[in-house]
Image (cartoon, rainbow, N blue to C red; front, side):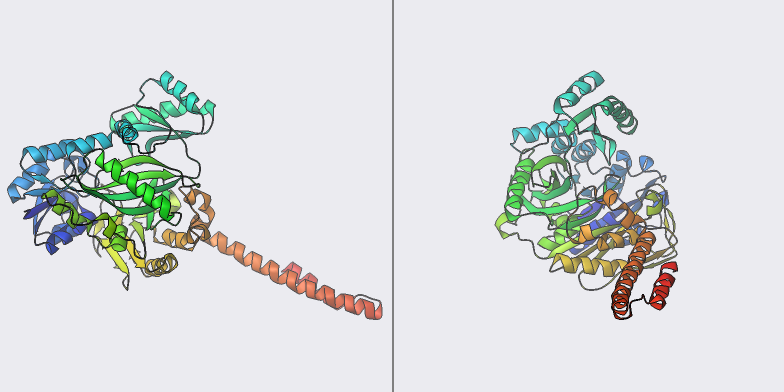
Length: 501
């Protein structure tokens, strides 16, 4: 049985893992960099160990330092959270070598699903639908030939990519060569690997993922879907479950394929099978995230399962006690990611000192955060400050609850995306569930320029009032003219005055 867990991460995910550990009676150990000396996860943990300078490349990404902290603390397991070393096969191997339980899948599963080309081939062999495309390509002439065979529009993607880097949309044949070259250049700089692959581009795509759990005894279940199509710069910002476009039949089919995908790599732990779905609900495997996802709380709320506790139980060899037939979705949940960023400046990070914070409270509201008044958000890490999660019986009620929660969420000292998220909740396309990954781009004016939208609304109201009033005057003049043979110049004068306004 696991007795002490070192959390090889920081911020809100470190806190979230530690809370589940505390409920299970497990001692939690924090690691921290110079920038995180005063971070909340350091204060909350039972023990904390310094691992180096602020840059993650010198602290949180240093395997030797993490392992050394685990040895010093006597931790018998390591939870990687998400990001940093969570999908690093070398780290998983090192933990096994050191006799430390890695709370996650095997290094083999991480390697297979971490290489997009290998993952694609594995899914084809498992019978999981994939987007028409190629294997790994390094020669630009070969890439050009394959691109022409598939036909535009296509996506050129870095084989070792992530976070939207090394990704190019190509809409016409004349753009193919430059897209391949720029994708390779960015991939080489970001990942040290300039290989790319090409996929058919799906018009009006929806990004839908299925949560899976697998144990070390071959049992795999899915915990239904999450809709993740509200994105900026190819990164998710709002997620919800159930998906507003899903039907029971398609949900059941996709769930079966998600389980098959996990079984194909003997997956043990919590993971996510990501699909791309078109407007006709045709779906294709996109990738697998071999870790816990940022948006996992909405699944927890709708299904009623603590995913971190399940990860720990699986890691210590327990069989899944949950059966697929026992799982049901109840109600509707939405998550908003709260960032220290400036939506008016292309969502650029806005680190700084938190002067004041009022966190939202109330029925059906969950807040996973780590900042506090007087805390300075460092420049070295992802600017996400918290996750705001709401649950309600219906989607309409969940949207109303999220709007209320966002309205009461106040942070000063840094710029945030809170008002932007409020606008998303008010957007007709979102409220009607009629959106895809182009949502932000399509609704840019509504989301980014609310003042202009209000001006338009006011203009329309004035014009409508004017038309209504002048129509009434026209009818009155017609009566007067028919009665005495001349127009009513007094009323015409009134109408001209309104027009001058």
